[in-house]
Length: 348
Image (cartoon, rainbow, N blue to C red; front, side, top):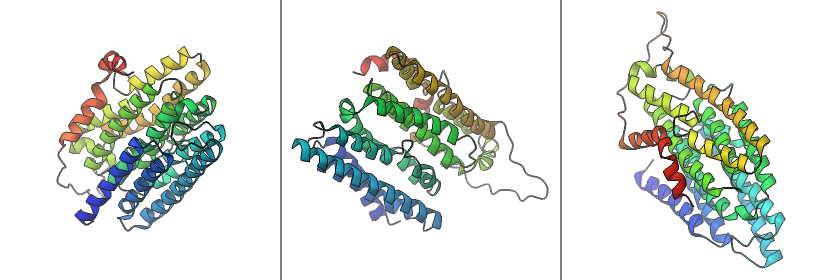
């Protein structure tokens, strides 16, 4: 892609997210979301591959549907209350429609159907943008709307997302689909606690972005998109294989790694709110998610790539050396748990 065009698209992504962050008027927020969607579509389709075209088409249709629903919710609220302000959504029907639209935008269950298929059709770099940056703008809206949203609906969406995210990733062999179901499960944890402790939602979102960034960068370093292709990583770079193992376990929420922190704090807050059954269901579903992360860890570090005599050897390309971004994100993905008291005191 032309560097000038790429610069314009990346700048538009930043502009759209910034408009949503700073906007207090529904039309300005909606405009930011639209700029975000239109900026990533050329990045998704740049491969000129039928699978990429299919993924881009599915993404455009679902995002256009969500944007239309969000605009309809804001217009309905303005019609009944006369207010276009983001925090003045006093009409409960409009608030429910807005939550449904934002759930479709980020891929919450049961509106998750597009996310695994779209992520599977993208390359790792664009998939990274879709899994991390594109979540920021909808969550900026949710963090402002949370007092006006139905807590029971938020709880139902969150629990369903953790269940589908845990079950859906069990039988997958494609790394991008596994990361898509991982995204659905993590979004479920964030939405469940949104009404009771929005600071924990923000903490979980930041840590999820850091861990997902590390995972995508590692897979891109190995140039792997399937489980059987990642099996050769231990022979090519043993150190990166160990880092991948620790990052995946952190993404699954295993102590004493960073990913355990948000799950621990969220379960603690749910028990304080006497929501024992949702907390139990989410803890069990976290074990399911951990199982398919363990599958990836087993394939990464404990297996050898099959290479019988009648099979041609894979090309050994020049290794991609870890960058400073990968080093920083890996450190944050693994070593943040001892700082939990400090982080918890700094959050309002």
